[in-house]
Structures are given as structure tokens and as C-alpha cells.
Length: 437
Ligand SMILES: [Zn+2]
Ligand SMILES: [Zn+2]
Image 1 (tube, helix red, strand yellow):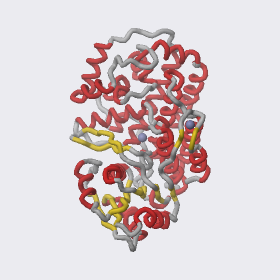
Image 2: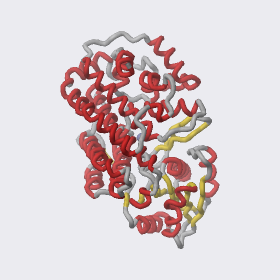
Image 3: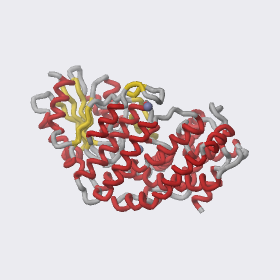
Image 4: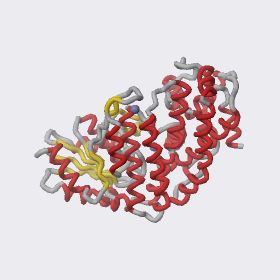
């Protein structure tokens, strides 16, 4: 990882002015051609003379699994290759990995990106074993995360899991990933713009804890990725490595905040909403980062419309009508979400208070939103150039999926975002109508 970024992370460890104590649990990040030496040294430290279970899928085994095995020569390695056209972190794959773990296993090594990492991370958590991930694609920011989204009975459920001890990879491995996975990583990274703006908005409107140094580090990481975006389509190793660093850094920022605030806002809620719908329909899933990129462009437009109107009072909200709309939008899953995140939940701050606080900081917030809106075309261009989608239809959205997501996706998580603020103020539907007009 770029020395300065990791050094900045380390410098933020410990007590912070934001009121939190920040801890980085993943101790080693290496994205360089010497990753095998790091893997060997880490394995020696973590497994000693014990067994190692290495997990990959067919593609990632060729991309880096074989090289990882070489690095682990001398260790007792059991290998698990997950097979199938569309792999998920699900009961079958978690079971498959668990079967390969025995009393002598001391370390798990995941070779892959989303699915393999999520599967191994969960097993590591359940078996109290340390794990290392060898990343094979710069496709998402979950490398250093500590939760696992698992597919259970057709539903993605996020389970508590554990962080990797080390994230290792090399520019050569990352450049061998399919181009759509590189583009998806850029989409996930560009989503940090709206995630960070949502975080700031919540800090102002609800008083949620906000860490300025972490937010500023994330802004710099996104900027670094943007500067390197032109190199992604021609697989410039340095550009692909920089993108990966930004993605891994997002995970570290989440570790240090203790939640996903620095990396996930309502653009992620849109993405999760679409994914849930596509799973319910039995539709093949598009990549997470693709959906995040498309959603980010929509949320920037929502910010533009919100700050163009300057709301002056709280409009009445017809909760019964909204409940009916949510039941419609979420179908069989509605009850669960309405229970976890009730529409009339007593917030620490009322909509009136939120409005007053936002108005008191209007110029500052508007300036940030305006700056982002001014970049929208450039961001769209970066996604296009990298080969990623920019339109909802390209990520499998059909019919009312966009409108439903803009109106209803905030119910997915009890997290304050622009969509939630607009809902509370009674102006969400008007803004969505404007954006979709
Ligand atoms: Zn993401
Ligand atoms: Zn802080």
C-alpha cells in the first residue's frame, strides 16, 4: 500500500478528537510483487507447525492460488476449490470449507475477492482461526471488512465475522482480473463521495459521531483512484494497484470507525435494494460495485434537487400510505424490515430539529453538494471509460426498480442519509419525481 496512506491510518490509531479510540485490526497490507514472502512469513507466525486450509475458486486458484501454494511449501496445506458458475457465500460453500477444517488447522487462507473472502471470513469467525486473504480482483471494498453477507434461503443476510490478519496481493495478480471486476471496484470507490456527504449530513442533522481525519483520508483515497481511473482500461498495473489500495483503505477506515459509515451511504442502500429484488426474482446478480456506481450518479442528482429547493418547513408525512408502499416494495420481506426500522421510530432528533440544524449549516453543506454535483459528468465518464455501467438498466433494473429504490431503500438500514432526511421532511417523493422526470 502507498506508504503515506497506511502511515496515515496508523497515525490515527488510539484516542481521537472525534471521541472514539480507533483501532486497526488488520496488521499487514502488502500489494507488491513480494507478497509471497509476506504470506510465508505470516503463515509461519500464525500457523507455526499447524495445518493451513487454503480456499479458492477455479479462477482465483489459477490467478493466485497456485502461487500461494508454492509460498506455503513445507506447510501441511489442505486445499478447497469452490466450484460452480455463480458462486455465493452460502450454506453449501461455508459447509464445504468447514469440512476441510480439523483439530490441526491453525490458519485459513482465502484466495479470491467477494465470495471466497466472505465464506472464509465467516468460517474463521466461527472456528476462532486467524485468516489471511490473497486478493485477486480490485472489485469491492470488503477485503478488510469484518462482516460477511451470506445468502440464506435466497436472502442476503449480513453476519458478524472477523477481519483478516493480512491482505496480500500484487499488481500482476490484480491486472489479471476480468475488466468488469476492475470497473466494479471503481464504482464502489466513487460511491464514497455520497457516503461521505451522507455522513457529514448526519453529523450536522442528528449529531452522529463524525471523524474529520478519517473522512479526509477517505476523500484523498477517492481522489487518488480518480486520478488513476484513466489507466484502468489499459490495465496499467500502478493504476490498478492504486484502486486496490483505495478499496482496502476503505475497509481499514470502517475498522477504525467501528461501522461502515466512512464507506457506505444511501448509494449502497440502493445497491442492496436492487440486489434483494434481483434475488427475489431469481435474476442473475450484477456486481456490487457496478450497482453502487450507477446508484451514486442517481444520489448525486438527489443532492442537486434537495439543495436547489431549500426546504423551509416539515411537510406532513402520511405514515399509513408509506407503510403500504413499503409492503408493496419489499413483498415477503416487508415485515422484517418494518420491524427493524419502523417508519415512526422515535429518533433522537425530530424532523423539525434536523431541518433547523441543516438550515443553520446550509451554506457549508450546499457548497459540498454543489462541488460533487459539478463532478458528476466526470465521474460518469470515468465509469464509462473503465468499461463499467452508468445506467440502471445495465445493472438489471426493470420497471419501477429505480423509483422504488429511491423511495424505499432507506428502510434497509437504520442509518441517517439524504433519503431519510427527505422522507422525514415529507419531500422525498417530490424530489424523486424531479430526478426521474
Ligand atoms: Zn461497497
Ligand atoms: Zn476520529
